[in-house]
Image (cartoon, one colour):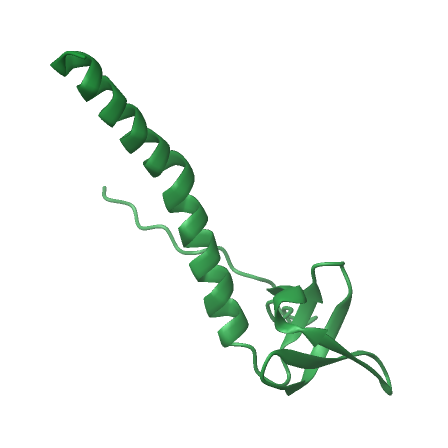
Length: 102
């Protein structure tokens, strides 16, 4: 093997790392932070698509109220996302202000 082919292999590995490994680690870290930040009262959607409100946070599980007087116990890792709070009925969401440099 000459130096050029070795350099090509190293560049290929670096490219694969940047394209595949690094983004996956970032997604895992964001998911872990989201699960660690779960709190009572958060509205969540499970990986299976069920919406509910967190009523209790346990060590590895959470209690989710999916209907009035109906709670289920889920593993934390089954939570897909925290649903952001809805905008009040009378309020409209304002787009961010854009400054012009004229």
